[in-house]
Length: 235
Image (tube, rainbow, N blue to C red):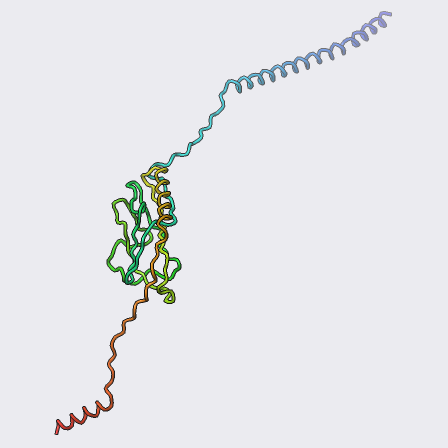
């Protein structure tokens, strides 16, 4: 009887112990989970706090430097106001109005001299020794000459006597000048060129080819008379 009671007591004790063990494990897991969640929340709050208090990194943008007055560039002029004449193979060009009154802080640089139609070309020696020469790169300034010269010759003999237009294109060098003043000067050049009109010259006669004089042989009669005279003199 005593054994039976002892056995029942042991069975009852064993039935209670698993329940206790399971409850203890659940509490441990819940505690660990709670601790991990708390750590994560704390880290998140710290990160958020740092992002709120740390100022954003500033990026510096470099502003393009303004052009100095000595780097204003140049403006193209299609045709300058000019007058032109040609004499014995020498072309003379005179710059008129605004083209002859270049401001002190600007330059006119010739970029092209051309003829329309192209019945004339540069060459020969008609202007030998006369300067400055009308050519690409000629610089016109306030204190410089307002006239230039160039030797020319006929490239189309069939056009002799016809009128040919002379055009001089240039660029306004704005070094040292304000952009607005440079633009006004270019506009004045364009206006003057329209009012002056195209400069024309007449296609000259091609130069005559020089020939050396030829010595003609004596006629037969002269040769015979000369021979008889020589014979008589000798006798």
